[in-house]
Image (cartoon, rainbow, N blue to C red; front, side, top):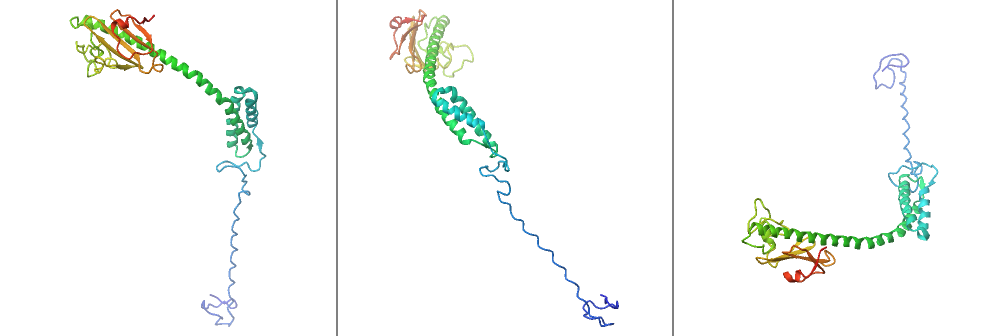
Length: 284
């Protein structure tokens, strides 16, 4: 370093100039920079937080809250639905209540009236739920009757198909006479008919009604009905009865070589003979 008075060079560790004896002046120490003040964390209120705003929703930062009109409308309609207008006011009350709750949830606290919307929803549902039970009480029996009627018609149609199959079998195998059971008219153990049928398995009925288990005295099920057939060389009787009376069907059907399909109410416990079948009422 150099002396500030005479400019002579001197060691850095010297305390006085060796030429002029002037004391070495101490360099002024740098003034430390003031420490950065720690930022005061913002509180939820200072960040514009609004009570009642769910996490993830945008707060409304002090904007004035507004009442959701649809919530009020839902409440009014809900009251009317319980007092006098029932279904006419209940359905709009439920619809407006759901819309209002959705709008309030998305508004980030700007809209109010969630309680009104909930009350309107509850009263609206109370007014319309009994009507659903009434409709169900009317519709379910009607649907059951329609199903029973459809099964009855399908059973009569299947009897007709069996009659045609018996005539075809007799013409194809005249020496065998009529098929003694439904299994003979069916496809056999394989359940398919890759080629022409045989006298033992004529392939005139599908595997559902003519499968190999439909032998003498056995009943095969199709569309809620049980079918069976017995025959001699010159006559036969085929019968269909409901699996569950008044649930899958309401009538029993039969037919013989005269090809007339006959019926009687209810079910049969055993296979009728030809004479008994012909005493039933013909299907008109």
